[in-house]
Image (cartoon, rainbow, N blue to C red; front, side):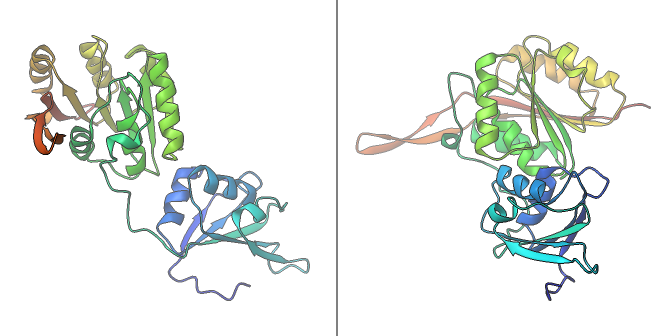
Length: 294
């Protein structure tokens, strides 16, 4: 009906099945043409709302309704215009993106791009190394325990658009920052979990990956709970004190592929007419894999 080629298009179906808005947005962001089989719940109105919520702009949407029937209708327009229309359940949508991106977003969002308060934040250099060490897949399920401002959660959400990220945080001010940063970076697959770990973890789906940035003194109990799940998990943890580093070394050394490193970063700063490198506090970075049930 559109007289367009479909051979190189991405084809998705939300007909009678779950399809996350973040997964849809990732496909549209990386393909010139995306076709979506709709149903009564995932209709073109839902599609246009998902585009808006995930920060997708500059695209055209076409909808074919009751194709091959006498009352067939084919219309196209901006997401805003299509979103105001009403459609029946038997329809197919096509999204045209004239400037598709290649792959996933780059790691290493500048620190200044995040909304920040007094809550501690994992800085860009450590954050980039930590997320890289997680070895995420596009459909990973990630727990960010002690999420702080949500900087790691946001980076993970951008790397696993077909998965989900759960930011676990007990501080009320930090929870507000996570919500604001998730909205700023269109991380619609990021869910905030208020509360303290390990208690707050009991309602979550089992993770494939865990980032342990803060434990509130419950590091051992959190690791015990992860082990009790009986599923394979890739874990990355950071520490800034010798006591925490010592504990993690002993606790994780029995896990698979255990690695530890101390990362010391110095940042360039201006001092009058000159420049100097100012040292940041060193951070201990740990990674390991739990094999799950034997």
